[in-house]
Image (cartoon, rainbow, N blue to C red; front, side, top):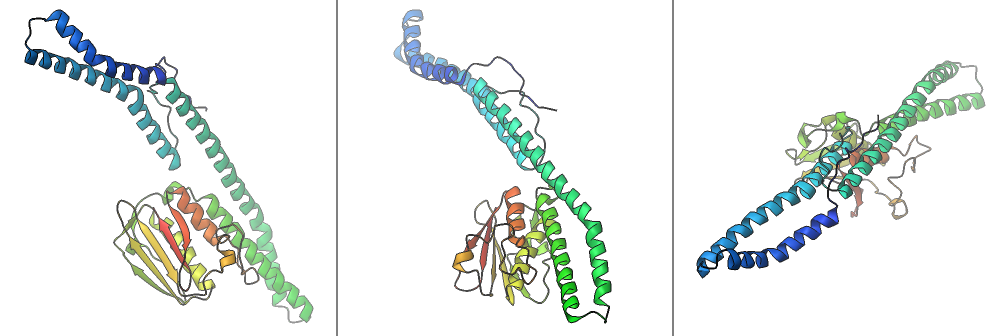
Length: 319
């Protein structure tokens, strides 16, 4: 169902601004003329007080009109944009102020409908593909496992079976990565959690966490996904230690993840967040880990960047 901004007559924005400027310019002159014409017997002090009272009253009326016609609709539009960014459905504005703001509000609603429909289509397609591939992949994996157990296979045939097993496992990982990246805007990832309360998955690598009291605007599962992929990325690159540091400068939150691995070469720094880009394809890498992290963070108001470091790789996440 299409959402539309209710049509009501409102003065154009230029008329509102022009009237406000005109009122500011004319008000002092009007006050002096009114005092001279209606109360010529007033003293200078009394005339000044009268002009001040009238000016204050007119200013309050003008301020209320500006709040009603501009400030209130703009705040309402900002609130609806935040609802849309969080994956919700925003209702049309009841008070759009001026026709220009009404047109802007209608455009935002239409844009949100298009983006939400596109996101739903991508998610549905990803779920459909994952479901349709599940049965044949299971059959391929089962047949390959049976062939691997056959001692009568030649060396060449056994090599082909091993290739099939690796390809099936890689396709499984790609399908899982596609499902995760399509669901990155899932509302379940919205929330707030302290860094220290998140269980960072790590096997065979030392993980140090500092700043555990810092709160990040993600659910525990969402932050766990981010840290899990970064730690797994460091481990697969040969790192033995990862440092995770949280900080809260000002009103935001910053997370720095540093490892002691070989780092990312200068030629690959600009491509490391590209989906499917990997230097470990022969070892089973899918190139989707950092892409998933970036998509999830962008969908929840965060950003990730690769920082310069003397050794290893250093990622900086800012909310």
